[in-house]
Length: 259
Ligand SMILES: C[S@@+](CC[C@H](N)C(=O)[O-])C[C@H]1O[C@@H](n2cnc3c(N)ncnc32)[C@H](O)[C@@H]1O
Image 1 (cartoon, helix red, strand yellow):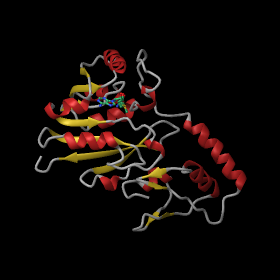
Image 2 (cartoon, rainbow, N blue to C red):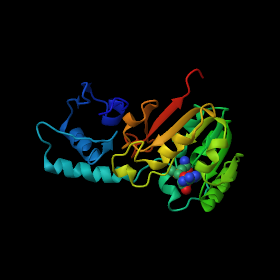
Image 3 (cartoon, rainbow, N blue to C red):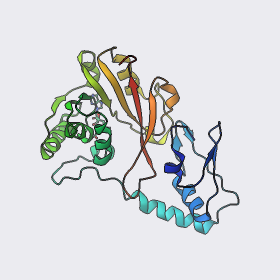
């Protein structure tokens, strides 16, 4: 398991031992072992598929029960927007950053000038604005941008929205913090890295030194963090009953030296 993943939060409150190769071991009751096997089935973290081995083996009935519980949990995710009246499109709702998570992140950026490069339905832009940041937001899909502007009105915050391609605008943009939540496509199901995540590579290649003090990137858990050695990475978990132990995304942060 990658070292940026906190074992207790991800695997459960047991005593875990971790070796240098990333092997994590612990002793736990059969029911919890079955639960872990079900929850980590097919999970790829940091470019590697997680393998779970139980010794002695978990009984099949227990494992099947755990799979059912996992399917139930999958439906109890973190709330996207808590205020009534927000509008979401079918695609946008799949990737909006849930409000409580967006607010937690935004509190770390209080009162700064934030550029949200891929604003989507406004999940992050609205949270940054609610934390007292001065927010500008870009979105290439003008219909989705209109929904984000509507959502900002529901929350009573003011954001400068721009319809357009971030990649074109980026060289002339300035701010304290560049927030990037690029579309992941099907990268949630496969290993990816800076090179294969084309839009991330393109954006990072266009940022000029000094245009932003910091860059924060929201990346799928499958992303190989080794391909961004200059970034500090941390796991961000869900906050709903069903996804509290699930890594929703990797937060990768870069700060220019001397700032
Ligand atoms: C993952 S979503 C952002 C979700 C957002 N953080 C939220 O919480 O609602 C990515 C968004 O980037 C937009 N997008 C894709 N390419 C873009 C580009 N070159 N410039 C600006 N926006 C772009 C997509 O239309 C999509 O709405």
